[in-house]
Amino acid sequence: MRRMKPTSLLRIGWSNVSFRERPAVGKIRTKKKAKEREGLRPGEALRELISHARIRGKVAEMAQEIRRDFPHDTLHLIGVLKGSIFFLADLARELGGEVSFDFLGVASYGKGTDSTGEVKLTKDLDVGIEGRTVLIVEDILDTGLTLKYLLKLFEERKPKHLRVAVLLDKVERRIADVKADYTGFPIPNEFVVGYGLDFDERYRNLPDVCVLQFGSRGKAKSG
Ligand code: IMP
Ligand code: MG
Figure 1 (cartoon, rainbow, N blue to C red):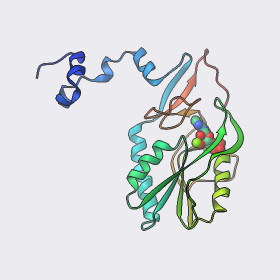
Figure 2 (tube, helix red, strand yellow):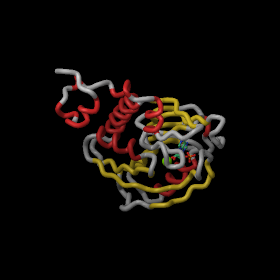
Figure 3 (cartoon, rainbow, N blue to C red):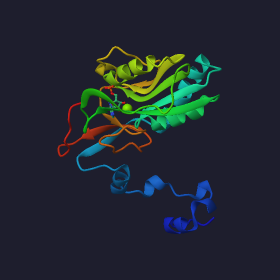
């Protein structure tokens, strides 16, 4: 097949073109375009910490381990909004067997990268958890204050089992004495975004987990 210009490919649509014929999209992107795509603002930079492929591999391993522990139970996944949505979606699809979902909203971070240390329930569960096998699904364990609050709240509701899965664990930052039953990646004390994690609601849609770095013009709060 004759090599076509990217513009004509766009017009006819990718479905008519074999994979071998598609141009390497990364190569035709300018640096500026890549920055725009990632939503970078002046003074901000991203450094990939965990690629999407590694995340997906780890999530599949975690799902196998969880299912091995509860082979016959309906697993009731409780996603902590909003950071856990991609993790929950991928984990649920890897789990197999019966799975149900619910979501809960908490606010533990103000604007920026600093924790206020205060945890507040902004959205409660839609259904009760009494007698269920519950898995709290969290994006990241940092000080542990959010998880401590959730464990206390949920234990009072008498689930059959209560377990915790976190994708990322900033081990050094722990204040509360809590730990997850299933952990994806221990990470250093750096502010990360992507795969659901945000900075002021931005960067959640990045497929990889990246360290957000602030240059001289960026205003970084310590965190
Ligand atoms: P913790 O209560 O300090 O453990 O904080 C948990 C919550 O803080 C997580 O669910 C995240 O929403 C948020 N958080 C902690 N560290 C980061 C980070 O590096 N990037 C983005 N959000 C974070
Ligand atoms: Mg969160």
